[in-house]
Amino acid sequence: MQMRFDGRLGFPGGFVDLEEGLEAGLNRELEEEMGLDVRICGITEEDWAATEVHDEQNFVSHFYIKKITLDQIRQIETAATTAKDHGLESLGLVRVPVYTLPRDKAGGLPAFLSNTFIGTAREELLMGLEQEGILSHAEIQKALKASGARRQ
Amino acid sequence: MQMRFDGRLGFPGGFVDLEEGLEAGLNRELEEEMGLDVRICGITEEDWAATEVHDEQNFVSHFYIKKITLDQIRQIETAATTAKDHGLESLGLVRVPVYTLPRDKAGGLPAFLSNTFIGTAREELLMGLEQEGILSHAEIQKALKASGARRQ
Image (cartoon, rainbow over all chains, first blue to last red; front, side, top):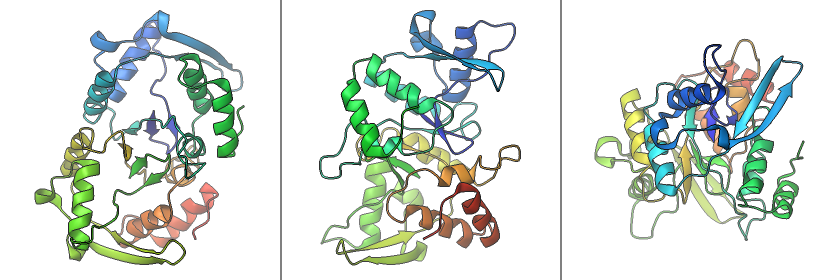
């Protein structure tokens, strides 16, 4: 995830231009915000995971999930520090701890979930962890309970 | 600042070994966690800012502040992604927004301050911002009020 310009954690993304498709717009944003080499790990229609209608703000958001290798994560992290929007839209990339520390029952994912997130980013993170089989529904519920946060 | 292994925001640092001095221990930790080239921007006694006694946990912590250039920050951010402890103790570096967004009176520093911090890291951040003249006492109090967080 990234620390956003507004001090909240979220996923990279943004508004799609009128003349481009959804995935083209997303890949453009990923390149601008993270310096992503979309030829190597661009997003396609197959990575679509969810769509949400925001009636009050009058827009629709689409969430994509893509599993990548540790080497790809490392490449993305290094490239991100020189991306066009680094220091502007994005203040830095962070990995998400998906464990709970045994000695400190809130340390790890529960404490991470108690940070401040934009919109539904926390729920999207949890959906991704469950969908990809990284954590079970029960493990997520336990982490949420330990964090004091409520799933919307 | 960094997202720590425990899901909380904090500053890099750690315990000093018995045979090393305070600044030597700090520079070693900065090298391990951020890949800092201590020959270029290592910490010295002159950067010392505060000391705090933690009676209950039986340790003393020392906080150092050092002003660096934008080029140095960029070098540190890029080197940090390949540091020894990246992905272990540190999950990523983030810049701190020191502004408040005009349209969204919580976006920026206030929202950032509502994240989850380790120990006294939030107070140390605010002390640094004030000491270096980046924000005035009044500006910090205003941001804290907008964040809903209380300065300890």
